Length: 533
Image (cartoon, rainbow, N blue to C red):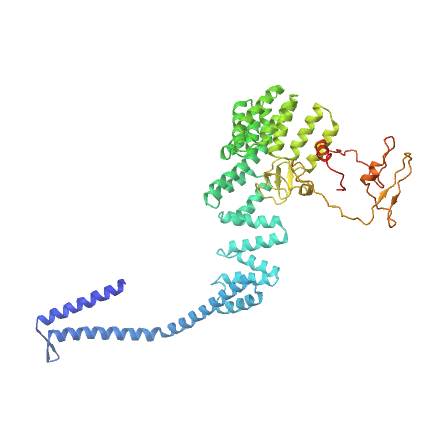
């Protein structure tokens, strides 16, 4: 656009100049070799402009003829390069689509048209084609060749890292990732692998520096960086809790400052403060974490903050926690445990039953069984509660990659991933899928309708004299040895008052820990008629 404007300005200026000369007539006289030439001023100006234009055109023609060999060679070179880039582009698309044969064909075509030192992508295409053909050794050689080129070094390290991961050589993979992270901390794959290596070796300070580098390069968000720093500082505090309590306390307090709702950080910070008799500050940290998310470890530390406290003092502290987080199962369980220690069985039973109503799970039934055993010693009731605990959902625990742990850990023992453990309920038992409505008060009892006219009825003949002989089943056809004939209502009514009740054939003996019949269930079923199921 600017060039067009400049051209128009020049044409306008020439037009003004020629118009000015036309309005001012004059003559120009030139004497050369005894001859005198006289022309008008306008003709002279036109002649000068024509001579200048002719000189410029002649110079352009001479220059074009002089540079014609280079121009022709450059034309063919550009055409060859365009064909090479077209082949390279097609090969990259084929490699991405998984077409190894076409990728290899286009690799050879691009290598003929473009020199590999001029276009590094040819090396990448060769490596990708080798991987698609299953030639992993050739691909590794290509990646190792890339390490000599500063422009391709990171790409070579990435390829070698992926090959090491494929072979399961974690040491080699972390070595390549560490070299890449030293060159470019912004690479996510390199930083993550290096971070796993540092945390696996327990180098918490090095891991903290790497997380700080990730945060400065904005590779991870600020909240994620604070979360990682809190996890690493908590792990550092755990490692130094016995050898250097002061450094452990500093790390734990910093972790708690970054994430006040992180239960492991709050727990270890409060534990170190309690050891230094700073009960008030430690209790405040636990109260803040409890308000964010109640946790049994926090309740345990809070109620036992002072080792010399009486059981009633611990019960009062548990009730204080309950006031901070009302209508929560963990609050009720904390009060129930403290009340059980204080021998306040009524409070313990009430809170345990309230916890079951809010969150029916294994630990609440076990606690209620402990209360029942301590208060009444009714072993039948205790076995009944234990059976319910077996079928109840499991308590929350620290879970990571299928591993269930009672204690928090900074990394997963399976994959080595940082901050993999999370507080949640493990996978439910299979029995829970079957008996999930066992305790529902209004649950309907499934029944099976009997046929209106049964062909034959298997009846057990009972010995009125109460002999110990085995009862015999009467049926239309001779039953097998393993068949068990059911006892009918008619046969049950025929038993005399002083006679011994007959046992069904092949009845299995009751296990020692059989909880028996739930009294509540017995009361519900007693008015009903006899059913087979």
